[in-house]
Image 1 (cartoon, rainbow, N blue to C red):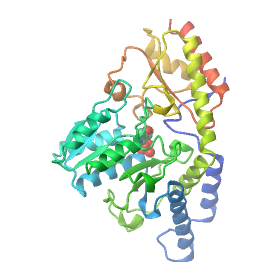
Image 2 (cartoon, protein in one colour):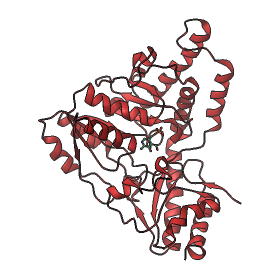
Image 3 (cartoon, protein in one colour):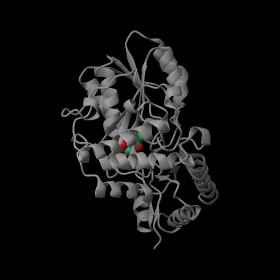
Image 4 (cartoon, rainbow, N blue to C red):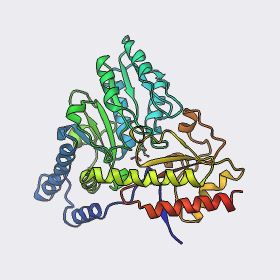
Length: 381
Ligand code: PLP
């Protein structure tokens, strides 16, 4: 049976070149980067080269990159720092942020440290910028805005530059969860001058369990993990050196021929949209499918109503098509998607999130559509 992986927003397969640099370092560099002898120094050099390489790709200072264990940790660190160190007393966000952000904010609200305000969005998850400006115009409380660059379930994009400009105009701190866009869009951080963004390597063919927080040198950051002086004292613990090397390589590969990757994946997505519209009457999409407003790697399909909708993902899996309903991080949860609830979507109809990578082929998407149509005709009737 054919096996097709269309769940790249959950995680991506590692690139061969990434595995090569990691295994090479595993064979040759075991020293602790904090050791001052030659073994340690050679590993430290790899670590700092990785940081420099990432900083160069994003046009920022190496000292603005703090390696973390994942995107979740980086999001936690940014939001906690904005509140605990920079003194934010109000958080403006949406109900469709990733749980890494949502639950961090919930904890701060519960502890009575901040007031939570939701900015309006439409049913596609597009943030109402006029409402955001109206909220920001009240400058009586120090404010942090936390809005994701692209939603991991429905793919809706945030106009990052515009939101950043608004935050600057009213003196608010801006954190954006860029976990789904890092490695998929170019960032010029000197030009953008945003406070905090985050990264997770496994979303762009790097290893799992490693990410980073970008902290603008004008902003501040406080550690979540106490310990040694690693990461300039901002994150105690011996560094995940192989993960970090893999992250840097994956980012380098992602930004080599970025436009060609973008075009290819958008073409794959458009092909799937076209075929679904033609072959599955009544199909619609959650979020928007307008290319300028939608992450090109994600397509969330609102499928025709069927009483057997709960069997959909299971049936697709049996036929070799891997996709997800909602976020992979909550797969198995019975509460449904907080994102679909947040945009007040019609959840009586089954939905499937297909997500693509630069390795996804048109043939794979054709197979998935063939299976989906066949499942609708023969299994879910
Ligand atoms: N933020 C977004 C938008 C994500 O999609 C994810 C992972 O799915 C995360 C944060 C968390 O990243 P990690 O799995 O590295 O903790």
